[in-house]
Image 1 (cartoon, helix red, strand yellow):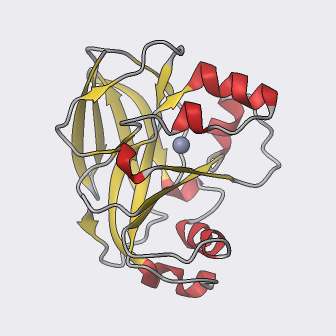
Image 2 (cartoon, rainbow, N blue to C red):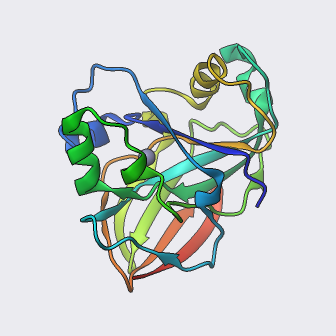
Image 3 (tube, protein in one colour):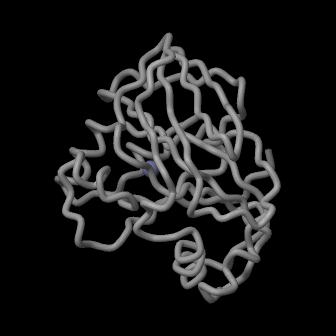
Length: 206
Ligand code: ZN
């Protein structure tokens, strides 16, 4: 998988903001994971076990063709090459501690194998704000999201990122998670599924 950089958008679904006790009136949060965090479908994910709970965050993920700097919202969808589903794995207890200290989130968000990513399907100009997706842990539905509920559309996310970074081919964006996040443990299996995108599965070990 030729991922150049992994950008992540946080606080993009109102009900997820509420479930973590965050205030809904702020901007979205932007953070990154190293490209080496990406895990292809079928690869087993080794969970860190010494830092509290790891949570699943199911997300629509877009792959960019590039785009450069200062991409206008109206032109942003021209930068999209592919779409898939992914997991923004998060050490939640550690993230809470870091938030409380006002410290950066890397330890909680950017650990090895923290970005399972399905195979990208070509973007065929479908409406990315009309994607329905679900996350099952051991066959139980945990998250069901619809991208119409995003506070920042994919186009706006691309616009915002391009004000700081020159967008390059192979850049990907995790576009935020809906409500229903929860723990994933060694021995679990997670399936991400969307009628419009496909079905992807990962197993987890200690
Ligand atoms: Zn996330």
